[in-house]
Length: 410
Ligand code: AMP
Ligand code: GLY
Image (cartoon, rainbow, N blue to C red; front, side, top):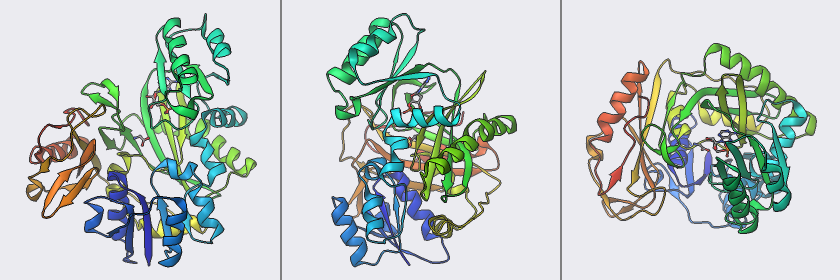
């Protein structure tokens, strides 16, 4: 059995780590991978959909799992399917549920998925005229993919106009800003529910909580995610029931009715407010760092699950009765500019699981090469124990200028 994992972050290291535990002992390839994935498989350098398809054909890869959304939007699944190569993820049309917010919000509205009231615009002047006299704060989103940076929360009309200009006129996010969605601001607790879709059923994983901001207490700019915990304490049985009725079931109905059928991930980015649960967005890939938190809790053969989902078959998930906490170690300066090349030490002292996010090997040494460098995940009988164990390891790991949030799971 051979599998190819596309991507090179902590998420892809965690996917490989979990696939390796399968009874089918797969041979793993990563494109491009990192220093962590090199320990459990072979890193390959293929830069385009064409090169990856050729590689999968030549090695007779039996399963490909796609990490980053950009590959899905670029149509990697379509290319693999055209060659009858098994791949886990949505084709380009289905991937629009993540890559095109105008499309996604239209889908939510059409099928009664609970989401913030919104309007879509393809013209800056009309968008600005609309923003006048509305309630603030107001949320302005570039419709296309913008690496998590295309959402601006405007506090007043002049900020709204400035945001619309930046996105639509100055094209800060390129073509992703050709259209915008303007929606109501929702206040509450965010919840990440990742699920697996087999083309007929959506099966949720445990709910996770992502820590998006760089600073403790959710302060400062947004990042890719500075840590995560699971289960998410805000996902109570009542919230779970509301999620099923207001979000999951209408989503499934919409996917089936529209023929948006695929095997892959449906990641619900939720906001739990006083008025109920709302869907902020769909992602059609695993979350980073949620994956590094969730997969160590999964008490099942991930490879078999993905193969079953890809074959359109039913499967079940079982979970360890534990809590997980992941802390991200970043290079000082992230998410703005940051240094690389620092040597990382102390990993030989660590007792829990370390996923490599952005580091490469230089001989025997490990060298930071990205903004998010390492992810430490620990499990515990409760959230407090998981947190304590994760931080005990984080403190043993050293590199110049390293930074981590001190309040993950706190
Ligand atoms: P999205 O890409 O739509 O998930 O937005 C990215 C982030 O912006 C979310 O994770 C939230 O933190 C924030 N956000 C998005 N939409 C809203 C909203 N309607 N109200 C408040 N915050 C939002
Ligand atoms: N951690 C949020 C995401 O992967 O989109």
